Image 1 (cartoon, helix red, strand yellow):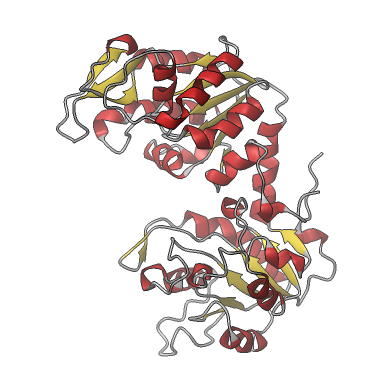
Image 2 (cartoon, rainbow, N blue to C red):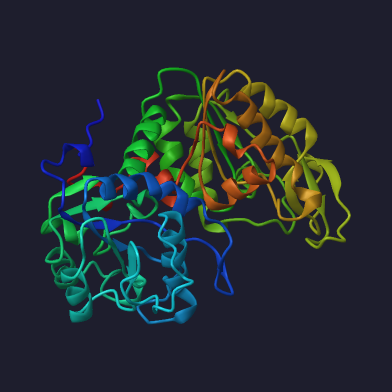
Length: 408
């Protein structure tokens, strides 16, 4: 049975100072947030802490600034948005946003004496929103001194950022050496839903696509014995085609992993592994490309494989409809191009239509969720994972530094 140290297990939570690690790594263009879902998902935990009169130090990463203060990745816009969501938007006031303002105060540092001073002025129910944690190069180095500095500001640590729980960073790992650690409400839900996949009680079907076979190897190796079918599409299928001696033309291929793919083909029972029988090809990847449906045995050297074909979608559909548990990670092709989106969107619609009734459907990975959103059926899927790489690592029994001392 899965055991998690959740925040409701923290004794005397009221009025404690909490270091809350969230994932607000959302797309921002010209200072405007393009997708607010990750912020919405964090609200139940934040509101729970506010109801308990906690003082909250909130930290997140944004992008890959590589330990430098790159203003393209400032978290100030995120703090403003959270301020709106928590009902304390006072932007009409002339008070600078970096000063105490309603519920949230944003500070232009993520470490140092200024953060310590700002924390000392926090009142119950208020949030100190730190600047991007990755502006300090010590974060990704899992630096103990930085972790200890953060720990001295708080009474407890809460991880609510599953998406980076496979990273050994200071705010995910080292900080737990100095503070009692708990799971936030979102992390708890994530782990409980993923556990249904790790220990399936009914017929499990994996639908795997995308480009990098390296990232899919752990989940395949860990779950192939528990799966009834493994459906392979996207550029991932190209490695299997080459391993079987087929031509893939100019298609995306992980050449260094062909020998590994051959090993998978030998290991996985033939009745479990399902590969495309037809694909959509073109001689270029542009919007003007002329799409052709071709049998997988008839690919020419000047062609790109850019989607699964209609017969493959029909075969995949047959297996998906027989499933009790469904996992999808990785698009079926170049779905950003309208001519090559039909496989990915078809899979998305199938999984959404099976979810919350006939099957338990779980979808994860940035591009996969993006493709699912294009179907306008995202809300029908049982669980949309907050992590891509983290989900694959967890389901593949990989190391999860962020979950140490939280799961037992």
